[in-house]
Image (tube, rainbow, N blue to C red; front, top):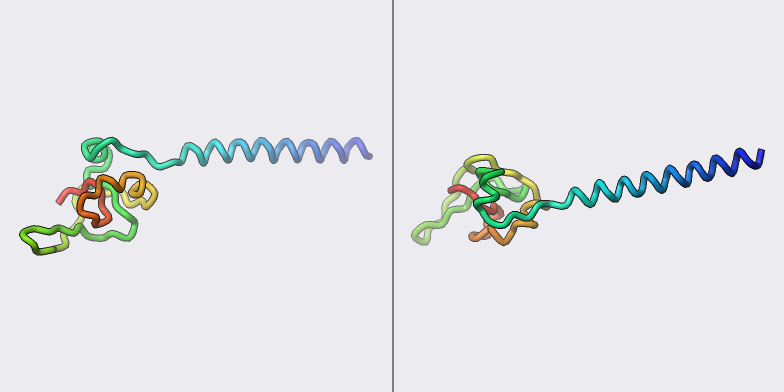
Length: 99
C-alpha cells in the first residue's frame, strides 16, 4: 500500500513539473513583436497598430485637429502597441497609421 501511494505522489510531481515547463515555453513565445520601422509594420498591418481603446485617427493640419476613421487593417493590441510605441509620431495611440 505504501509503494502505490509513493508512486502516485511521484507521478503527480512529475506531471506538475512537465506542465510548468510547457507553460513557461508557451508564455515566452507570446512576447509581442517589435518591428524595425513602419514599412515592416504596414506589410503586416496596413493600417498600423493601435491601442484597444482607439476608435479614430487624430489628424492635425495647419494647426487644426480633426478625427478620421481608421484606414486599412488596424491591429488593436495594447501589448503590441507598447512594443512599437516609438513609431507613434503624433502620440494618438496608433503607430504607423494611414491618414
